[in-house]
Image 1 (cartoon, one colour):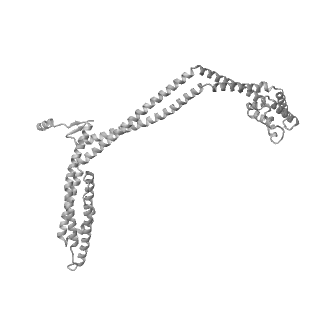
Image 2: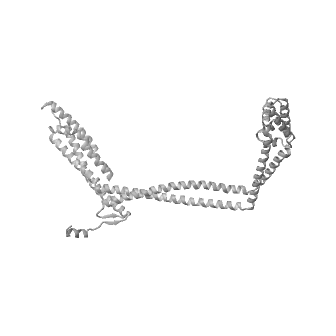
Image 3: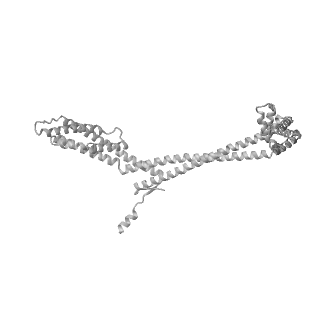
Length: 429
């Protein structure tokens, strides 16, 4: 590197670092300036286009009115030229209406207009250029004027297209869209951040409510009333165990004759062997001994049933093997001698009565409903806690995605801005 180049490089002005907001203002100002210039140029060009279209329309009328005599030369050739003349007039008249400039003058309208106009001249009119060539053979002056107008129009449309799609307009428009997208994402991020804060606040509230509920529950469980409730429920558990033992003993004693009792029940279905109460007692004994106490609290009906069963066995109405019959008879005799009332029915009735008394005492206590209400509240808040956690996780995921999008948009803006304004400005990261 030479000395001159080194000195030039030393004094070369570095691009000015600008913040995001300043970069946005620069882009918007530059774009507005470029678009204003484009609109000013387009306004003048539109006037030229209207003038040329008027000229095209007039020349098309002249062309249409020009009569080609078929008998003054090659008739077949002249007929082809006449056809070409008519086709060209029709195309020029249609083209003139399609190329009329738009009422609104803005960048988007100008861009769309320049694209469609160039297409109309270069592509839509292309198949009819042969008509121009043929017509030119006999109508040289008219075709010359039309050709000049079309050439001039093409050049104007090309200029409009180049200006409306210039690097400054396209790049700054792209940057403007980028800034707008960034702000939309920033607003979305702000809303999601609020949602996260609201969900986290609600989560804390619910946790506090659950902890308060647990604290109230603990206080209730330490109270004298709860101790009493606990003692009463312990008594119920003891009674349940006693009842289970009594029923188990009863079932054990009935088990040896259960087969006979089942056959007896079958026989009684279509006979008068047992009355309705005896049938109910027998069914209860075989299915639910506890319910038999309700039907036959003294055990008198049960004694009658055992006596009838013994008689059926003796008479052979219920037949069994001799050895088995002897065992069943001994079991029935023992059951007939048993004091069911004292040993089973009275005990079960007593347990039932005591349990009923305890349950009434428990139902009169408010502690149970109070604890139940506290536990219900904890359960409801627990479900809400799980739901809020899921919602919070979902919103945080949305927020992460939004932040990533913001970062991605910023990087694209940074790259485009620094490329477009590399000698003047540099966007701070």
